[in-house]
Amino acid sequence: MNLETVVGVIGGSGLYEIQGLESVREVELSTPFGAPSDAFVTGVLGGVKMAFLPRHGRGHRILSTEINFRANVWGMKKLGVTRIVSISAVGSMREDVAPGDFVVVDQFFDRTRHRHDTFFGGGVVAHVMFADPVCPEVRSALVETGRALGLRMHDGGTYVNMEGPQFSTRAESRIYRTWGVDVIGMTNLQEARLAREAEICYATVAMATDYDCWHESHEDVTVEAILAVMARNVDNARRLVAATTPGIAGARSCACGSALATAILTAPDRIPAEARERLDLLIGKYLPA
Image (cartoon, rainbow, N blue to C red; front, side):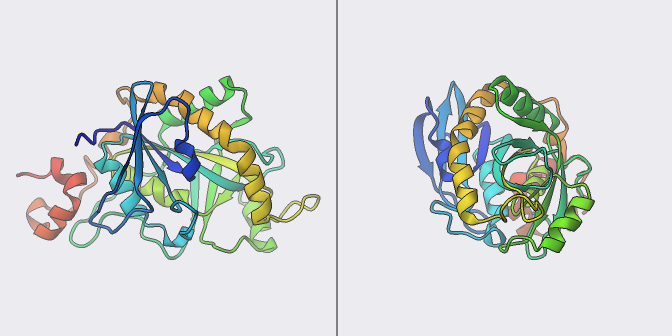
């Protein structure tokens, strides 16, 4: 079975219902880090091989804290994915980012507490550069394509990643606004960190669904309101993914693909055999045989 793929998409289960997607199949993978959120759906769109994964599982049955981010990103790497586009619902922390708008973020701020967000440890130490956590090539392509499609796109912004599953208190929401963050969500920072360690380009399209609970003239965020905005925007997300894919499927000139080249601190002869086997997909090319 040829598992070579190019573009991966992480988001809701409906994103792979893209017009023109051919040779659709499901691929179940086991990983050294446990089970991914669901089976991967692979297909070909305009000659580009793609892989889709619903991060919360089909039927949205996995809490953000419970998502096995390592297995999800490892699975994408195993399938040959070199670029990941993440589609994610978020709350807006800015007046001018209205529900229904797309924000192609360029920074993250971590407020999580209970998550695995590195492949390393257990005998291997590595420190990847993460000052700029989003691939500039994929991010630029998404902004340009979205604007060409007539979508309301915001170029850049900071995503504060809260733990959840509860929504923010009013005090938290107001303080986040003073920090200058632009959107708030529960999932994307771990994906970005792990994608960088896996040398996969990563970019987030944050779909604003509400104003969190800071906006005095708008109702507080509810699940019902989020689902209503998402339902209206899912077709726009599909269009954006389909239109962007051809432009990001070629050769890479960014630094994402060599993020580990100078990041591994552990001497090769001190890496345990178990760790070599577990991380071979990621670091094997940098270790002597």
